[in-house]
Amino acid sequence: MKINKHVLHILWASYLLVISHGTSALSFDDIIEKNEIVVAVYRNFPPFSFQQDGKSKGIDVAVAHHIADALGVNLKLKWMTADENVEDDLRNNIWKGHYLTRTVADLMLRVPYDKAYALLRDDIGELVHANVHMFAPYHVESWQIMFDSTAIKSVPTMAIFQYHDIGVENDSIPQFYLMSAFSGRMREKSKQFTTIPLAVSAMQANKVDAVMGMRSQISYYRGKLDKERYLLAENAFPMIGKQKWDIGMAVKSDHRQLAYAVGDVVGQMISNGTMANIFDQYQVTYETPDYYAP
Image (cartoon, rainbow, N blue to C red; front, side):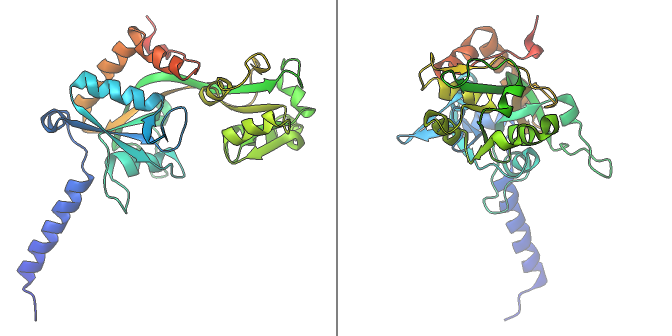
């Protein structure tokens, strides 16, 4: 049986409508009317967002709850699996949707907040992030070393890791840094692990003398150890590039009203100490972004 072309056009249009509906984030007014905001957080990423005993926990989960409560709506979490880079994560979770799930969130947390990054252009001069708006930095991230004081008395400079094994996460900036900085003098002492928790466990088992990673993760896992034995180093990281960077949020580019509303909530959380308290609950070192400096 032949199907009329007009019918095919109607069916195709209906299909596109369904797909479009499935991939569209909601505007601020729609969120209020629907009484729900969908917030994207990374899956299995302590101390920011993870599942424990069937419950959603973490710094970003708590931040998302505060935002939803302040807006007077219910919270629905969208658990993200990290792709190859942040551009992929933004595309899959904010403005387009993954090719399998075809769904997006209204708001995404843990997005780099950097003007140069936001204005990044591709090979033909087009804005890479034209479809998203990045805003509301809510903490400052940096690199950190935790070391076993029974093996190392102190870490005055990175040069000490020419002689002491240090654990890092595979395919991370710390790994590339330790493998290449100072003409590769720390390469032989750099030990790779699939996750920071495994590197920390190796330090507890005396297989490495220190661990390097993001300050928030390092301070979180140190909170579970003997703090008199396992100490935080205060050294800098020459030649690593950025020593510190701001972490913020993102919405679809044409949903600025939502960004303004959420930005106001985040600003209030920082000014009244709520944000610092959330970080403190997870024993994570908190630093306020310069964006909020008086």
